Each structure stands twice: as structure tokens, then as C-alpha cells.
Length: 339
View: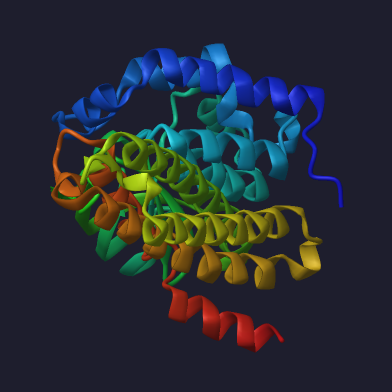
């Protein structure tokens, strides 16, 4: 199988990498995460208007699996907090399959941002020709930045505007400094998009994109760790010259390469095999993320968890990744059911 990017895909990668290098260093990433808003609206506008990456997952916009993988990996490498996967991949995948053309157009333009509510106890009832939702949703990541909430309810998938009356939010920050909220719905008006069948393939696409994001994080973590061990000195020599540390970094690299291969398979496999490949990738990347993150912190010593170095922030992101879109145990069981 040829893993070489086309000229257009490589241009996309380089354009995004150059933009992030100029506009999204660690200081800006953490300032955005720690701000009251939790994101940078001007960056989101650039994603839509200048880079055009919000349509990377949409065939109608010239996107596709490889474009999604390229974008997600670069965003992970820069520790971007803007909700690309939740909005452009998961939200866009559902809206495209539901035929919600107006909302999809707004998504590509950057005016529609979606927070998925997947851990829910929400029911829906018909009222005056529409639907009203009542119940609760937990850990809705990205809600403070969202214009819409995608609700996985008992009666199907619904789209709710984030400022609807009857929608109460308890906001908080997650372990990796992202903004989330627990929601309570009380007769909140919603638009029914369809059945849960719309969600499954979009969830697979989002899970694969999150795996690619984790690969980007691990590339940065490994590069920083190798660089640190070349500079940090003990007993009159760089600690990178110690064989036991060299062995650990080789193991980190091997885990990263296994994760990369699993991500490639998740994105490039046939639709019939995609669910199984995505679950295999989630398990493989989750194991690699834990090993690479923990090893990087150990090799940095106490500096590994300080606010000043990037390693601690990436470690928290890699830790949170293990629980996004299903744990490793969830995906192991799913994989076994598909064998």
C-alpha cells in the first residue's frame, strides 16, 4: 500500500504546519485553554477562511480520510484546543448523512460549532409538530464554544442550539484543560436528524481522527524527550548517552510506529472493515499514548510535570485521549464481536 501523500495533501499538511508554527506555540495554546472562553475565535476563522480545513472530512469539500488524518495529526502536534474533531469530523459526518445542508454549510464556514452529547439520559416527545428534549448529559466537551449540541437521545439524534431556553449547563475544565459541561434539558426544542444509525460511522471517523491527533502529540513528545536527553547532563555527560535511556527511547519510537500503522489502517481500510480497524487503532494508540507519555515524564524527571515544559501538558492530553470515544476495554470487546 502506498502511504505517500499526494501533492495536494502534502501542501495541506505544510500549510497547516506553517500556520501553527507562526500562530500556535505552547504559550498561546495554554493561554487559550486557560482563558474564560477556552479557545481562540480568530484561529477558528483562519481554519475556515484561510486554510479551509473545516471541510477536510467532507467529500463535497474535496476532503476525505487522508485529509482528515493529516489535519488531525498536525493539530495534535501543536496541542490545538479548538474543536476540530467534534465539529468538523463527528458533527460534519452526522450532518452530511442527515442531509442537513444549511448547518453543514455553516460548519464549513466556521459559524456552526458542535459539541457532541453522547453520555446521555435524554428522552424526546413531540410538541406542536416539533420535539422537546428532557434529561441530562455528562461531560459534553467543547460546550462553552459550541453553537449547537448534537444529542444522542433515546428517540434518535437531535440538534439543539446551545442557547436554547430550558438548557442549563454546569461548566468545568477537564484534566487536559479543555472546557466541558454537564447539561440538563427541560423541554428543550430540538431538530431530529434521524436514527442512531447516522452516528455510528461518524463516530468511527471521529475516533480515527482522535487517534491521529494522539500520534501528533506523541511525535512532539518523543522529539522533545530526545532533545532534552541530549542537553541534560549528569556525571559530566549528556544523559542521552546512557544506554538504558537510549533503550527506553527506542521503545517509545517503536510504540509510536505501531500507533502510526494502526492509524493508517483505520483511515485507509475498506468501509466494511472500518469499524474493526478503528477499534484496533484505539487500543493500539491508547497503549502507545500511555507508554510514550509516561516514559517522557520519567526521562524528564521532576521537570516533566512543570507548567514551563510542554511535556506535562502533552502528557495530560494523552491521558485524556484514552477515554475519548470509548476506552480500550470497550474497543477490545467491540473488536471481538466483529471477528
